[in-house]
Length: 397
Image (cartoon, rainbow, N blue to C red; front, side, top):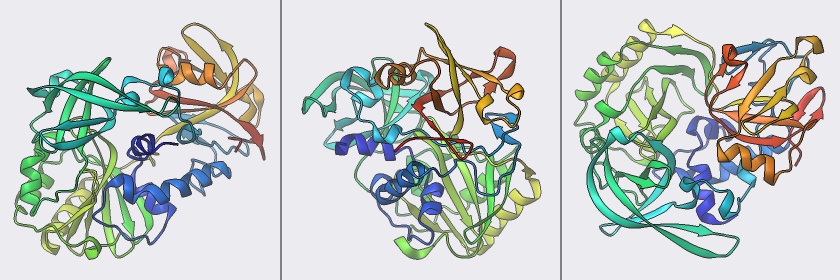
């Protein structure tokens, strides 16, 4: 796999999964794609070995995209997307064009789409580059570049590609000196929302919650503008009590990243594509933690991505049907899922991997399952062949 493709893939990984894959690993002020590379390889090995996406200890029934399913010895395994270097014609525009130089600064794509309504001032037309590993050629596209929301263009921009706008982030590390600087240059109060979080004691998860109003949290954070960016190892996730917010921001181009608040007075996050920590003090940290815990409503664990498995029973022009009967204790309890094929990321899997009726497959998706729409799977992005292993679905090595 070429390096540029690797940057794109591991840029989508969530830091908490990487820490879980390598317990006790130190967090450094390094780019997410560098910091996570070794752990991403570990995660790939786990998947190949048949480790379930569902956490150890989860009992049947399981929750898949909001739908409860009763399975036997089900082991739903993630796809092998990270192992594929797609030919140029099978790539989406966001996968093709991943690099931009603007005013002497290099930016890389997050692969995340941003609504045109969130774009700001036009910055000009520039060459966006992409590397084709099959031909070993660099391809270029002239594209319009815009500010992304109210974020400083020196950090994040929106690029108009063939099928929409995508966020590109500055590749070089330039850590903000204070949290106030981060608040301003990234316009955090407007582009970030705190609603889902987990509670932890060391590396042990103790619960998952949601809150309806984060105004009080922002009030505390805005009072921490003087908090200095601290050295890499100032705070470690493996120590003490803390909470971790799961945050997604279209303007920032981040999906399910983490924002930790520790009881000993630190905040630490990878939303800037580099891992930065700030010392806000125990009083401020305790105010945030206690507010979240007091006002939190317990919710089920939400994985980074959803996964379902079953047998392909039909392939049409607009969708494929996948039946999960093979995973059920009683096959009569099987459910049929409809996966749209209008997304290139799914249609290429059918063609390139030669998936047909009767094949056992694993589907990865980010949305929910709409039961009223006939089991419609929302946000499907990967489809791979599977094998039966110990009564569950496993992806072959």
